[in-house]
Amino acid sequence: MLAIRSATQIGELLRESILNTRKLIWAVSYITREGMERFRFELEYLGKKSGSMEILFTTDHGITSADALNELLLISKLGSRCILRNIKHINFHAKLFYFKLNDDTIRIISGSQDLSATLDDIGNHCLVLEGTEEALFQHLQTGKEKNLLACVFPEWEEWTENSVVWSVEKNTRYKAQRTETGKEVERMLDKRRKTEALWKNEIKTSYRKNRDALQGPFPQGYRFLSHVESLHDRDARIHLGTDRNAHVYFEDKFLFYVVINDRRYASPNLVFYPQPNGRLKDGTSSSPELFFPKLSPQREIWNTEAGTSRDEIVVVRPADGENILKRASEILDSLRHGR
Image (cartoon, rainbow, N blue to C red; front, top):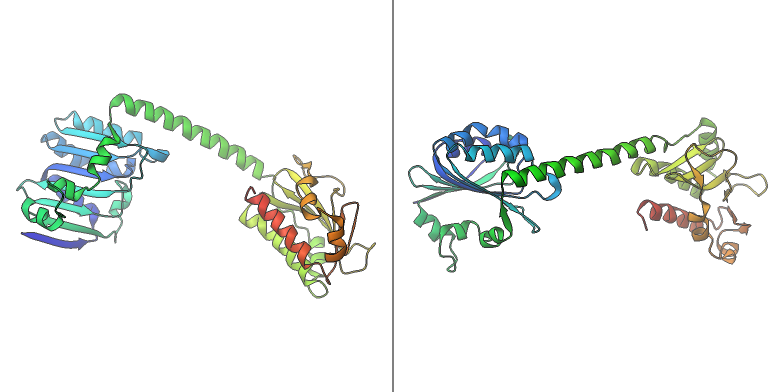
């Protein structure tokens, strides 16, 4: 006899199954502390009645909780035969739950959640197969497998060969490593937060007025400046300091100074300067070499495509400035993406 059904209350189904099983085998990618808390009572109950448990998991990426693993190791001391297997260095995304119930019925639950708090989320769909071992074997086998477990877990042999039996000693080392990694990540994030606090777009009203004046006579220039401003929303590493014109930075490096309608040239125009106009933002230094050689590798190019280039000062006008503004945007994007 075989029954196949779908269910949405996978958390409740797992609890009921644990309470009525004498053997469980689970394969889940990660085990979180919150997930363990949700099923503590049922797993301790199984441990006290000397049920059999085997759980395969992975510690890759540090997502699995050392505290949750410690709880499972303690449950094994209650009398249960509990084996924890840590699968290393292979792609392991299984979410399978196998139960041999008290009446010898086999129940297999296949879901999309690990052993985490999300198992209790309403609407988590899962597939349930339930029946005698013979009925399930006939349904699942492809002619090669010699036992039901091999049908349920086709990669079982590969998983076990690439796993180590977990222990208190291994868990202690894992917790220490995970703690130190967490501290290092937090130190890096804290440093990043402090640094990024300096990487703010400083957009003054006088600059906005100057920029907006380009919309009619020089729409390409207006779009370029608006684009540069918007980069800060996507990636704080590109940021501006403005008065009437703008200093443009990448992280702590000044790239260029752009003047809107420079009076020394026919308007409308944008003029790129490698030298800053006055004081830079605190904590930054001048690095126009990251921008200008790529913008103007050959001066004659800008004589034909963008107007004039004098001492690396690049003047951009509406008639033929589209190419150079596109190139300037590409350089900023390449800096953002590390190219």
